[in-house]
Image (cartoon, rainbow, N blue to C red; front, side, top):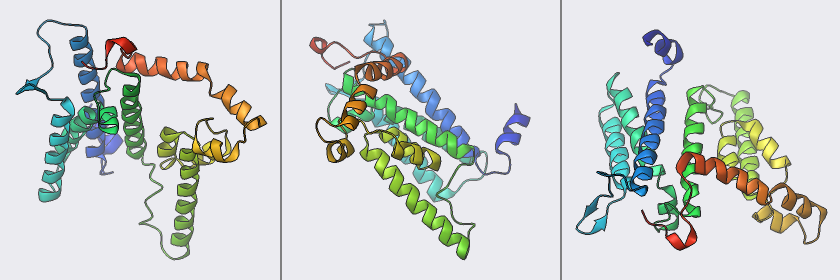
Length: 246
């Protein structure tokens, strides 16, 4: 195991990033397991309240992220302490992003359909971290100089523009991932926009062939397929009459 770790991140300086990813995934998995058991009414598990106020686990996640970040910047610890801080930062990320939908909507939508956005946020964070761990970092132009620096900067600008187009086409997850994998930006910018996206409103007139194709491509079957995946990971939302609380 030690040899595998050394072979994967030894000498690359990406050890803290690996432990951040591990902490993120484990934290999210454990948090979802606990919240689903609370929702099912398991004995001995309940929401934590302080003075009648439901204290969400994102509060502890934010505190852990803040503490880990301050300690890293203040002391710049050597291994293995920097790896420990990376892991604790990842744990905080997992707890915080698990309630991403709550701080996006400023409401307790954890078990509502809007709560699925938290699953998307964790997926994006884990995917980007994993790609960075593999060494994919097109934003790094520190090694370029002269003409090479100009080319790298131009590629970066083009990639940012294409990623913006992807976001305007209603594909925020793909837009974020394309910042790390530029070819995704090119593919996403060429393909159809979602019919409810800003790009479709600007470029797909009512009754046009493109709008009809987009509506067929991203119709109810498409949405249900992605919702099934989100629900498999995070749990299905409560029925509308059941409320969104935990």
